[in-house]
Amino acid sequence: MASDPVMAVVRVKVPSDVETGVLEAELVRAMWEKSVSAEFALLPSSWAGRSDKMRRHGFVALLCSGRSQADGELAAATQKAVRKVLRRRFGPECKAKVRLARHEAEVETAWLSVRGTPFRV
Image 1 (cartoon, helix red, strand yellow):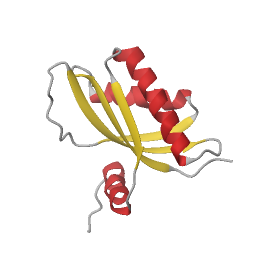
Image 2 (tube, rainbow, N blue to C red):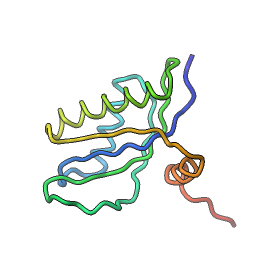
Image 3 (cartoon, rainbow, N blue to C red):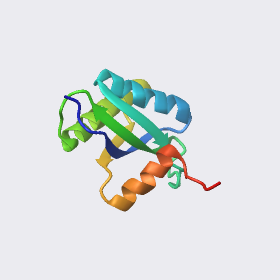
Image 4 (spheres, one colour):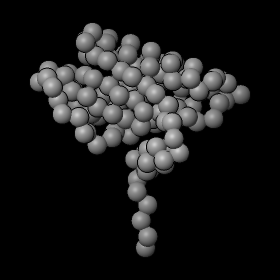
């Protein structure tokens, strides 16, 4: 039995020369290896880089596991998989943090980031 989709915020720190498209592909690949369906949307960058070597990126992720799994377990498995793939691909100084969307307002804002802002005709 599949679990319900979960919305999470994924923050990563990778070398500054990594393109966001390549980074997103690596995130999807990490989830594919864990048999988790994932959709990622890049958040607008609001972090000022402290270092020329590393850059932070934020993503909104919709995660859905093929088997029944608690939300916290899914977030922990996602974080572990993302860290492993990023460190293997871009170096040991890469970091990743995954947390579930907490409040209804946060979920609503994140959903608009994934699906786009609705407009009236």
